[in-house]
Amino acid sequence: MLTVNNISKVFSSKKKQIKAVNDVSFKLNSGEILGIVGPNGAGKSTLLRMIASLTLPTEGTIKINNNYTSTHNRGIKDDIGYVAVETGLYGSMTSFEFLYYFGRVHGYGKKEAFNRITELASLLDFDYYLYKKISHLSTGMKQKISIARGLLHKPHLLILDEPTNGLDIIAAYYVREIIKKLKQTQTSIIILTHIITDIKMCDRLIVLNKGNLVYESNTMDVINNYNSLEDLFFDVTRYNKNWIYVKFLDTKRLSFFAQQPFMDCSTSQVDCQSEKIL
Ligand SMILES: Nc1ncnc2c1ncn2[C@@H]1O[C@H](COP(=O)(O)OP(=O)(O)OP(=O)(O)O)[C@@H](O)[C@H]1O
Ligand SMILES: [Mg+2]
Image (cartoon, rainbow, N blue to C red; front, side, top):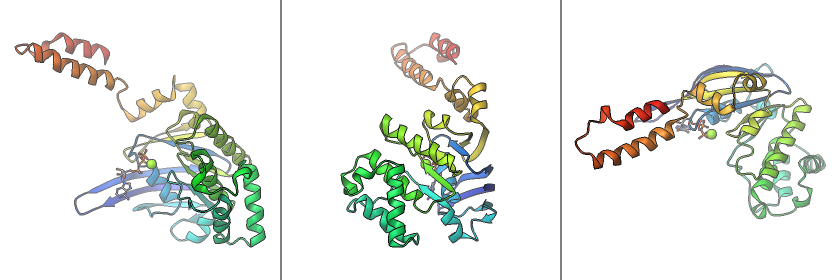
């Protein structure tokens, strides 16, 4: 369904160049949920924006259903739904007006747009606030409207950038149920998330770190091979799980030596403690 081949993205300014994504390749099949995780600044959103044709790669190619994204943009965009963290909702409109407007932009006739909105309102369970102003909705309610907007044109690929971010437990649960329902309709889904419950519903997982794809696996294999998803994360990104203790000891050492001005740092007791913990 989706083939990402050796893509890179460089952001250039007068002062410096940032390689946000470096030579990343992967595939996604129909009806599959792929999770993308990684630390802040790893290049996840940039990668998704390239897949959604919102920005072009500096190098490499992306194919959706055998069409290259750079050359078949219109057709490609019809195949993709993109839901970003910044939802881009229009607060002064009601949910219905907002979705109707985008339905018409996607080429639906008046009746078709109405029918599609009714269908989505029932699928995502927002019938009861369809005619409420968007600015009066809660975060979770707004997120459902964003997802509905991403689904209006029945895309085969849905890209969700942190879909449960800021939602309460119940709203996040409903969003996950929606994602599972969509999987049953053979929609391919990419979820970018920092939340472990989201990761668990993915079929496959990739980890990005500093622009590089550093790990790819079936989620079940990850669960079997690691005690926890945090362990995987610390392992493949080579972050130190104990840094907080080191920081704490460093602070403690500083105040300790402030009171012992003639002591040699390299042979101190506090240093030995810090080695033990590491
Ligand atoms: N438009 C831009 N211009 C310049 N640099 C950018 C731009 N967009 C992103 N970057 C840089 O690219 C790198 C990757 O950013 P990106 O937003 O893709 O990270 P991310 O993995 O989504 O992080 P987060 O988890 O914080 O959302 C960062 O160093 C960021 O500063
Ligand atoms: Mg991001």
